[in-house]
Length: 120
Image (cartoon, rainbow, N blue to C red):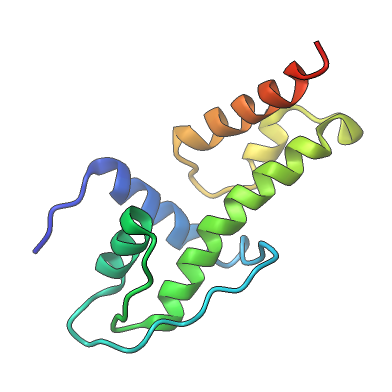
């Protein structure tokens, strides 16, 4: 059995917990084939590390987790684009997630910084 990093474990749980709410990103993720020898975590590791969708025991769940990952990134980009229109603080957006890892807020703040820097 593969031992995953603490960061991967945290991210996998985060996407699993948020897959119902963050289920849209404007694209399509194809279902991988069924493969009873690979569990969802192993398949997601392959996607997260190598960008490959491999077959697993529950392709629909894998699809939901991948869509969640893409959706989180898409939402951060969209929130940055509309940040000045809504006039809410960063915490307003971060509260949308269930138990977000620290990198979520850091990514959001860094994207805001890059967005605002072009006006300086």
